[in-house]
Structure formats: C-alpha cells, structure tokens
Length: 448
Image 1 (cartoon, helix red, strand yellow):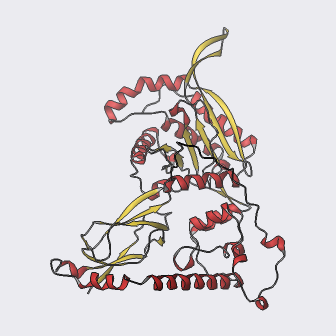
Image 2: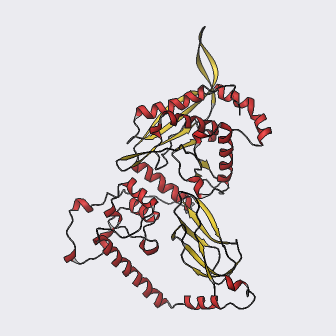
Image 3: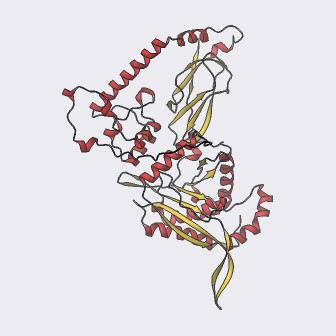
C-alpha cells in the first residue's frame, strides 16, 4: 500500500496555520485527484484542500477544530487502491474495525486524556523555560492583551499536543480565571507566589437577558464569533478617540459624473468613490507615516508598506476586510481595478486568506448605507481607521473675490478613530484634515 500525504498548502506569506472546519470525505471513501477533501478556515476566509492524489482516504490526522501548520500532512491517501477501486478495499474495513470501541473504553480513554493534559499542564507551569509552541497569532494576541509568557504557559490548550489556539487565548481573555488553580501539584516542589502575581483581572458581569414569548435565539456563525471577539478585544486594548472633518467634495463629484460613463464603456466596470478615498488616504499616510504603525508592548512598529484595508459587507451580514497592498505605489486606475475585484469576490466569499492579511490602515464606507458619519472600531493590530460618510447636497458659505456667497455644495463627513496610546489628537486630527484636503483639491482634469 503506497500511502501518500496530503499537505496543508501555503496560502500566503502571512498565513502560518489553518483550522479544520469539516471533512468532506470519510476514511475508506474513494477520492479523485483535485477533489475537495477537507474544508479549512483562516481568520474569516473558508476554503477547501483538494486531494493531490487519487485513491482511498486511509487516515485523517486531525479532527474538526484542530489547528494545522502550513506544510504539515492532514491526511493520507492510498494511491494504489484507486487501480482496484471496483474490488472490495481492505483498508476501510480495518479502519472501521479499529474505530468500533465500547462506551466504557471511550470513557476510560477520555479520563486518561484529561489526566494526561492535567499532568502536562502542571509540568509546563513548573517549567520556567516553557516548552510549548505558540503561533504568531497567539503571541500577537498575548502581547496586545498584556499576557506574560508565564501566564500564557498556564492556559490549557485544546490544539494538538496541548497547543494554545486562538479560541483558547480569546476564551481566557474573556474569562480570565487562572487555570492553575484547578490543577493539584506537589506542595514540596512549588514556591508560593505573591497574590499580586497570579491575581486574575476582574471578570465583567454580563447583563441578565429576559426571554419573552416569540423571541428567537439565533446561533452566531463562525465568522460572526470572530468579529465579535475581535471588536471586544480592540475596544479593550486601544483607548479610542475619534476626530471629525467636513469636506467639500463638489469638484470630485462633478469629475466622477463626467467620466463614469466613458470609464464604464472602456473598462467594463464602474468607478466608485472608494478608490478615490483609498488614494487620498495612501497619500496622507506618506505625509504622516506615524499613522501607519502597530504597537508591540512598549515598542512602536513603523510599517514600510502602505496596505489599505476596505471593509466590505457580505450578503449574510458579516463583514470582511480585503487589503489593497502597496496602495501608495498604484495609480487611480490600478486601485480601481483592485477595489472592484476584491469587493466582488469578498461578497461571494471567494477571497484567498492572503488577501485579508497584512493591512496597515482601514477605511469603511458608512455612506454606502446612507449614514452621514460613524465612529469605527480600530482593526487590530492597526492604530487607526477612517469612516467616510454619505455625500449630500448642502448650502455652504463660499468665499469669492466679490465676498461670501451661499451655494449648494456636495459635502461629506470623515470620521477618524485612532489609538490614543500612540496617536495623539494633533496627529489624528491633522491626518484626517489632510485626507479631506486631497479630496477637496481634486483636479477636474484628472485622467483615468
């Protein structure tokens, strides 16, 4: 029998691992080459791993919910079995026989595994060197939440070999109860620790919810849970401040009205305001590069690349943020094509994991829903985000050489939320003002 491994594929420079959602093939089933074998998830993007071999699936190395590193085997295929697919296959029979276990044996196995986890956990707590592998995502969350390595090592992991997954550390953040307290350890080998060292943060009480007749309970899907955890974490980590600017974008609106039909005829797609907003933001970031940073403990990481994420609402109500990489190096036509492509595929959940990674600044267009302004939540680990409101006709005072006049102008609000740990009001306010300046000073002769 020639068992060949099916590896977790590389899905982008910044993707180091993925989570198994569900198996599409069972052990013993025949699998064709390039046929989807298992569904996986990276952050908010779901995708499938196709089989690189034709044959019989003989081993599934991970269960639903397990985290797998890129390049590791996830399953084994018996390639020789495909030649005799019409004949009875012995492997599935043996596998089925192996999996038929009495309830007593299952209970004993679970008890043994729990005992082993507790023993391993106690060993990790006593071992000051630390022996577990932590993914970059888990380490980033730990740093953002102020979780020391000593505390991180006390968090029980639900991943393979006791690894701490993203869900484990977020559960600890939301319910910060010191796990060491539940694990007995030999008194003679443990040095008493001062209460101030192990004292867990206070757990916020949740409001009581009353249920009435006719109320409906809707279970959050996986992506909504991720969004919820990410937003709560962002508000906990970053002290949010928001600055507002009103911009006169009359020239910009008139220019777009003039070129949109010819652009649609020539390119076969629309030109919206979003690429223009992204271009203005990229220019302003070059003027104020300290907006394009992240925080790592007491260190500021100044980003070289200007990667602007744009929030896109999906049909199911969830939100996803594809990223325009190196937006500062692209012209308006290039940004427009990229925005249209990413937005279209985002709405039908066809983005690749790498296309939602690496953002350094985010913009959300609340104006597309008719809102005039918003106070967006920072997309961690970034330090700022901008909401652009609806463009509306309003009377405004215009200064002319003959005096002030009142005219009908196209006006909009820009809302800039930023992390006050590193972005003060001066920088945050000047940045959003600079973006407004670029929009207000739009050249009517701009070519695209």
